[in-house]
Length: 179
Image 1 (spheres, rainbow, N blue to C red):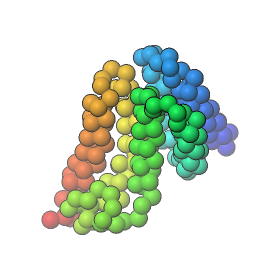
Image 2 (cartoon, rainbow, N blue to C red):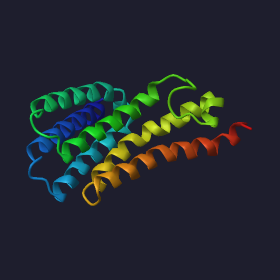
Image 3 (cartoon, rainbow, N blue to C red):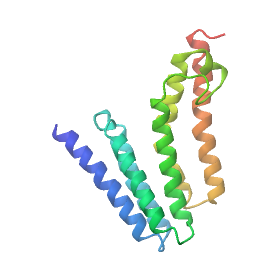
Image 4 (cartoon, one colour):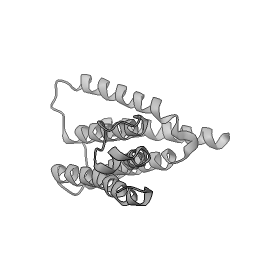
């Protein structure tokens, strides 16, 4: 019980520290600050993969998007800079990843390839892989943005995020009795 409370507290503190640090240092950006962001997100990743805390992530994501909306309204008179767009992109990736694990089987929504359309179990496994990859992909976006062009980072990250579940789906499909 104490371990669960500690993990929840660690997740909340690291998330709040990430938001405050990001907001206060948005005009003083350096590679070190980017690596600190990545470290804070990595702490959240470790907590995320602890199944005891995973159920509480949904309200935390709701809080994250509420804070993003408030920050967007406050900064609406200024142009959205690269750092804020990275933060928004990572938030959207995490949100979509978690949403993919909650969507019931549907051959018209999600990753639509022959193996996911023909097998409900394969569809669920593929979308769970997509959900599990969302936080590591967000960390990859934050990490690579310190060294590469933003367009390159987004392209590489999205290709990895989509190709790995598709390869997994095609790989397990024949083993489950597919054609």
